[in-house]
Length: 226
Image 1 (cartoon, one colour):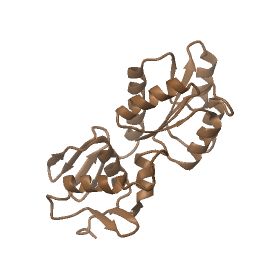
Image 2: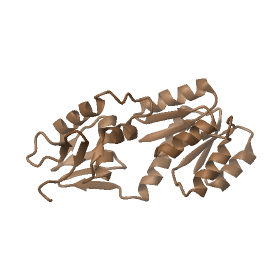
Image 3: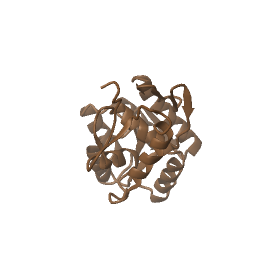
C-alpha cells in the first residue's frame, strides 16, 4: 500500500512516515500544498493523510481539487484540536475521516486501516490466477491449498501484479507503486524481490506464473490457461 503524508511540521512528518514505514507501508511525504499537489498528479495512492494548515496551497483546496477531479482516494485530514469548522468543511468537501492534533499514533494507524478496509470492500476482495489466491483483507496468500508467508514488500508486489495480471509491468512501475520517490532507479531491488517471490510461489510448482520479458519487466500470467 502506498500512502502520501502531507504535514508542514517536519518533526511530526518524520515521525508519522517512520511509523508507517515500520508497518510496511510505502510512504511519500510533502511539507507544503504545492509539493503535495505534484505528488497527487503524478502517482496513485491508496490513502492520503492531509494536514489542513499548509503553506502554498491549503489542505481544503487540495481536497476540493481531488473530489472535483473525481479522485476517490481515501483522505484522512489532520486538524487542530479546536478547529471544528475545518473538520466540518473537510467532511463536506469529501474527506473520509479526520483526526485532531495531538493524536495517538495507534489511533492514526487504526483509522488508516479502517479506511483501507472500507476501500477494499467496494472492490473484489480475493484476486486469483490459476491456483494462486490473494485475500486483500486478511493479506493471506494461498497456492494449491498451501499458505504462503510473504513479507510486506513481497505482498505489495504480488498484489500489484495480480491486479494487473496479463499486463507487462516495467521495473519502474513496480518500484513506483511499492516503494516511493526516494527509490534509486538504478537499483536492482525489484529484481531481488521478484526472485524472492518466485522462490515462494513458483519454485515448487510446475505451472510458473511470474515471467520475465527481457529488457522490459515482468508479467504475471497463467501460460497454461493462455
